[in-house]
Structures are given as C-alpha cells and as structure tokens.
Length: 580
Ligand code: C2E
Ligand code: MG
Ligand code: MG
Image 1: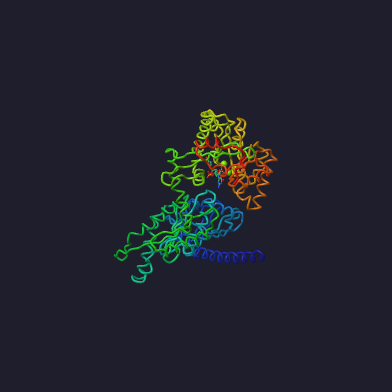
Image 2 (image 1 turned 90 degrees about the vertical axis):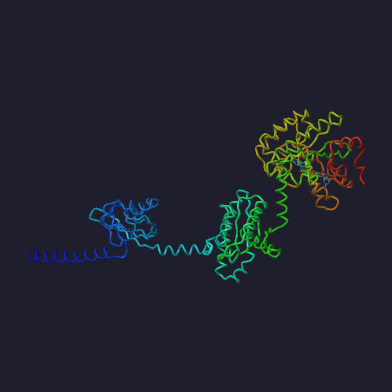
C-alpha cells in the first residue's frame, strides 16, 4: 500500500517534471530565432516555428501536412533536398549551405542543419534548422566580384582577363585558331582627370568601357586592366589581318568625342597588339601587348601597333596573297618552268623537273616558296596541283611529239595532295587526257610528306606505282623518319637536298652528310640525284659519293618549255668538262 502511494507520488513528480521540460522545449522551439521545421519521414510538415513562418512567409496552417519540397525547395534543388532527408533518416545529421524559396518566389541563401528526431515510438522524422545567411553570401559574392571585376565600369579586371586568356589559348592550341590581345590606353585621360576632375575622369572611363563593348563581338572579352588601360581579348582569327580590322575599329570608335557633363570631350586611343603563336603563353602575350602599346604611344598615339612589325607585315602579305591566289587560277596566271636533270657520267639530259611560277599582275613573277605554303593551308593546293600535273603531262607529250628524247618529267606533290583520296585517280586522268605514258611521269614528294604516313598516302603510292609511275624523295636529308619508308616502298630516286649540296666545298659537315645520304641511297638501290649544283667543282665529289644525276644552275636554271629543246640540242659531252 505504502509502495503504491510512493509510486503515485513519484509519478506525479515525474509528470510535473516532464510538463516543465515540455514547456522549456516548446519555448525553445517557438522562440528560437532560428527557423525550425519538423518533418515526418516523407518530408511532410509536422510543425514549424514562428521564425520559420517569418523566413519563408508561410503560416503553419498553410503548410501543415504538406510536402516541404513543394513549398520552399527550388525545382533544381528537389533532388538534393530529398537526398538530405534520406541521409538524416539514416541517422546521419547534415550541415549544408543551399538555396530555398520564399512564398513570394524570392530565393534565400540558407544554411541547413538537419538531424533525426523520434516523432513517436515508431516514427523517425527530420528536425531542420534554417539560418538565413543571404547577407553574408551577398558580402562574399561582392568580394568575389571585386576580386575579378572593376566596380567602376563593371568590366572584368586584369586577373580575370588573364585567366580567360589562358583558357582561350588552351582552346586555340587544340583548334589551331589564333588569338589577339589588344591593350589600349586613353590618350588624353590624364589631362581630362586633371582639368575636369575625377568625376569627369570616371565618366570618361565608363564611356570608354561602353564604346569598347559595342565595338567587339560577343565572343571577345573587354577588361579594364587598371587606370586608363583596357584590354580586349579577340578570338577566332587566323592572322594579323583579323586583329588589324578590330584594332582599326577600336581606334575609329574613339574618334568621336565623349559627352561629359554636357561637354563634348575629344578622345583617342592607342592600341598595342600581340598575336598568339602555338607556343605563346598568357603572360608572354600580355607583356608583348604592353610593349606594343608602349611602342605605339612613343610613335605618336591614336594608332595601333603590333608587337612584332615583321610578323604583322608577313601575315598581312599572307592575307593579300591568299585573296589574290583565288583569282590567279581563273586568270591563268600560273605557268611552269623546267629544269633539266643531267646524267653525271654522260652529260645527257635524263629528266626534267616542272616548277610552278605565278605571274602576278603587280608583283611580277613569284616563285613557289612565296605561295605554295599558303595554297597548302588554304586548300588551294588541290586545284593548283591538278593544274600543274595536267600542264606538265601535256608539255611532256608536246616534247615527245616534237621529237625530244624520252626522259621523264618530274612533278612535285605537296603533302596536302596526298590527303586527297582521289589523288591516284586524278594523276591517271591527267595521263589519259594528255596521252603521256606513265613511265614518263615521276612524282616528287618531300620527306616531310612521309612524316605523316596515312592510308591515303600508302594507297596512292601503291596504285600509282603499279601503273608504272616512279616516285622520288625530294630534299632528302632534311628529314629522318623516312628511312623505314625507304625500305617498305619501292622508291626510284632520292634527291639530296640543295642545302647540303651547296655546302660540300666549304663545310666538312655537309660533305659528310652528302656522302652518308648518297651512300644510303646507293645501298638501297636507288638513283641518287644531287640538287642545287652550282659549281662544277662539286661534281667530282658528288660522283665519288655515288650520285649519278645532278640538277642545278651549273647546268641550267629552270627555263621555259621551248628553251629545253634548245638546251638539249646544244649539250654534248661530259658535263664535268664544262666545269669552270
Ligand atoms: P624543289 O622541288 O626542291 O625544287 C628545286 C628548287 O631549287 C627550285 O626552286 C629550283 O629553282 C631551285 N634550284 C635548282 N637548282 C638550283 C641551284 O643550283 N641553286 C639554287 N640556289 N637553287 C636551285 P623553286 O622553283 O623556287 O621551287 C621551290 C620549291 O617549291 C620546290 O623545291 C618545290 O618543293 C616547290 N614547288 C615547285 N613547284 C611546285 C609544284 O608545282 N607543286 C608543289 N607542291 N611544290 C612545288
Ligand atoms: Mg622537287
Ligand atoms: Mg628539292
């Protein structure tokens, strides 16, 4: 009995204690400045405190029993919210920074603490505490912004500019496009700042930023690098001409006065340009653009300047030749010259190389070195190469018809032509159309062509070789990876590069190279021809090395087709005896 009395007293005490504790927790829940929500195990709202109601603008009655994800979780975060609940229900508390949506649709940055809570003896729920930290986040964003942008003009700063340049250069290395960095400086900023005040100076900088933004394409970036210096990052160009066009546009954009405090203030800029090369780094390009800008300013302001004038000229020249080349074929401005190849022992003409020239309407006759590379890069080598082939075959046939002895004609093929899967077909067509037997056609390819072996190359060599066309390796000795090819393909002739032959009398190195290269050709059973023989004194040495054919100014420069006939008639005797 006594026991029973004690336990009832005890129960009353415990119950009252529980009551007190519940009141504490209830106050803690209700009065907490943190927004607290209680969810069941399906994310439905069981309870929420006043701070939660205030933060998310919902009253408890509006959200009670509803899925919280439908209410305050932005669509792109629903997945994340569900995962967080699952983690909590597996009794792993979460501490997470995220974004939630208020009733009026506005977003708020929150930190979210979630922990498991037993709703009753059977059900586990989620206890979520949200803290609004949008102010801190805003502050962080502002700091981030200041680290990368200029607050006065809203443009990226030097740091971000260089970062973008780095990314663009990495991309350009993959795509092969080029990038220009333009640095520009307002020519009269200091004067305006000093005479009209800093406010006016600021307005000028803002106006300059606006003009630059309007002048460049969307894919280009404009930045304020500091003071009155701006930078433009130009992408997607192939040469200095593209950069020049933009630089000119920038200079022109500043030729119009800027309106400051109701006054029209004349402005001008100087631009310094650096153009990327495949190995250019961001820091180097920034330094080059800076140097170019400095050069531009000392040379007289209101203008643009390339970092490297020679490069600029070269690329401008490239662009103009490129444009003109397109018309040159239509206007039949190309023609061929022929250089005889002579048998060293007998002095007889044993071959003839066709070399293309361009009769340029203004520049006069241009040699292939000034346009073949441009043709290769622009794809024009295809049609030009076909024309050379056709013309060379026709000419050889005309000689045959006129009784000129049957020595083969050699035609140079560029590496790019071997990428054309129809090359073999085109060569055969040219032979068919001219009526020239394949044995009278030799094709010259350089060692660099063999550096990039491909199926198309191997197939073309196979097919044409089977037809009876012979192949010669041109400029032999300037590359080295062809040795494997030399073995695997039945080449007919190697032509030792002029650059070595020209040095055999003066340089022991060149003499050794020619000797070794000729020896290699002989051992492989090839005809060895020495190119660029200018001096008769070279002939003995070449003969001793195993060269059997020679070609060069000593015998004849490349000449017109008609002159070949005359040369052949005039030449008799051993060419060695013709030495000076
Ligand atoms: P290549 O095939 O090695 O041609 C020999 C070059 O050396 C020619 O220059 C020729 O004029 C020059 N040469 C010949 N003998 C001497 C000499 O004794 N001394 C000196 N200093 N030079 C000599 P060219 O005509 O300027 O041709 C240059 C290169 O252009 C050629 O080198 C060839 O690779 C390329 N080329 C010429 N015509 C064509 C063509 O129709 N198609 C292709 N793809 N390339 C061509
Ligand atoms: Mg050649
Ligand atoms: Mg050569």
